[in-house]
Length: 143
Image 1 (cartoon, rainbow, N blue to C red):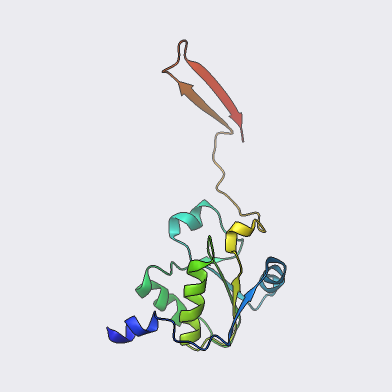
Image 2: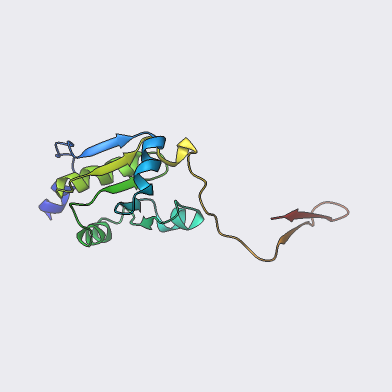
């Protein structure tokens, strides 16, 4: 148990972590040999994510470590989250596990750099009924 606690503390030299701006991150994820990991919760991931990214929630430590075991430590990994805090935590964990190249998106999703695919709902018209108003108002929104 102490090993797990130590693993999640910041003890890495961080020389294999590079915090990159959005333009550099875009270039990195365009490469075919890079793994892109969204370290947010599954709920956040399902609301929209970078195309091609896999989800590994850094707050679910056991699953996160299990997911990392399946990766090649010699290949580059790009991580991101909503604000940058969780991706920074994930990057440090990966550095402790001796991943050679970890790219962390500076400012993360708040940079507005990515147009994330959001779920599409059918039907194409949502109807809101506002029954508390007299008379009831029906609003139509096209998706």
